[in-house]
Figure 1 (cartoon, rainbow, N blue to C red):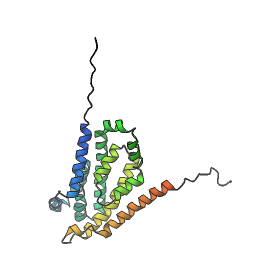
Figure 2: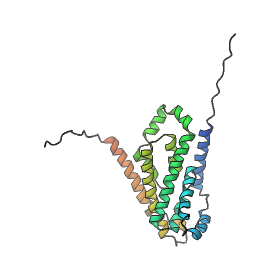
Figure 3: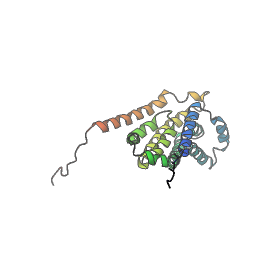
Figure 4: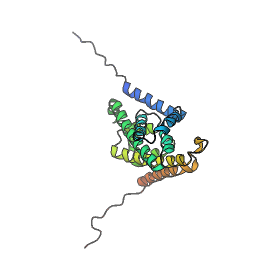
Length: 232
């Protein structure tokens, strides 16, 4: 008796689709500025002196980044309520924590799909261009959605030893420049004009340095290291 052929149905990558929806929603919200950070600021003015409010800002920023939501509002909250150095620590801590959580979240959500496509040429090309210089350059770029970097790095399985330092550099540079500008202009009538060209120029310069560094690293030949340069 001939057994009927069993047709195998392709599983719908539900997790990957959900991950794509989260990224798309996060990028959209990032550019629309739909979150009203003024309301959070009003609450923060009453509790900024308490010991638990700074950790709360860190947690909120981390959770926002984990789910690809815009966390830029925490720059304004921290910059207005705290001194630049302390505000930078808050922003960097929350940003790095959120980036790592987003990295792990996207990594777990895309595991099945990544295992299937990691041998493809496209996957290898994209992964080869996720080096430290490129990650640092994109992370330092003004107004670039961090969710794309965090989730993309998780999907591509970018090594943590490369992802973490580039994230720390990007958030530190942005954090100090943004919170300093916001703090010193906290008495301005229109806070939307605080982040001006002189604030983002250093970030653009830092981005270009990473790009140039990557270009030189690829173009310049490696110099052989002589085992014995001098005889004693």
